[in-house]
Image (cartoon, rainbow, N blue to C red; front, side):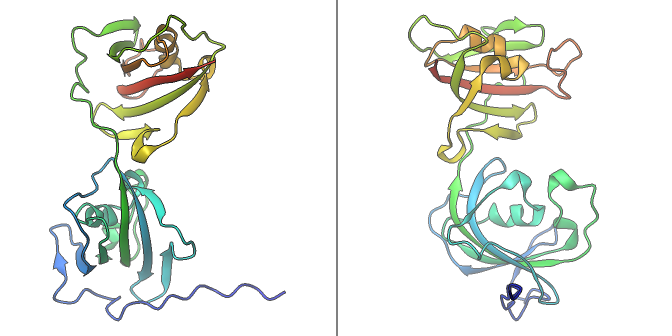
Length: 250
């Protein structure tokens, strides 16, 4: 059996360096619009996107591509290299850009311990913005009407459901959940871009959720502040805020 042939996608003629007509930013990024998009909406730091992309090293060798699949890739800006994040935040749906990313902007934020070694050139097409849930306005300071449910957790009811049945530790629940750091970084969401609910057994859910879930009925939506202090059951490294909606119970 013959080994598979390597993927070859010809690089653009200006792969090694941006032309003079490319726009440069203060960070050192250079971009050039190849096809304009429509509308005025741009992705923001907590959003995900559907994109098509191909990236080359400056010598023209292929670095990465999404072109092997038909559907655009789903990527979340929080996990992408800073240079592409900066480019995408300036783009609108339907837009295609060529982006010259200097080496210092090629390492995703979660991997800043690694040393970049080379510049990259990308062509990026933005197919869709998958919006994150709105950032809570009271992220750092729970309101007075919020109630303490455990040594490290404070709860506020955002929407009341109906019925009288509450989950117990052995109950299986269907939830929509979003979680932020106290600095506003979205680290999980079943809501983003339409999303899909998650199933949990209450006793297997994160410790900070269990007391809150056992107070809820189907249809309830709550905001939960979880302390990162030593007296918190979670022993988290930082304060976290969750929005939890109980969709179904069995």
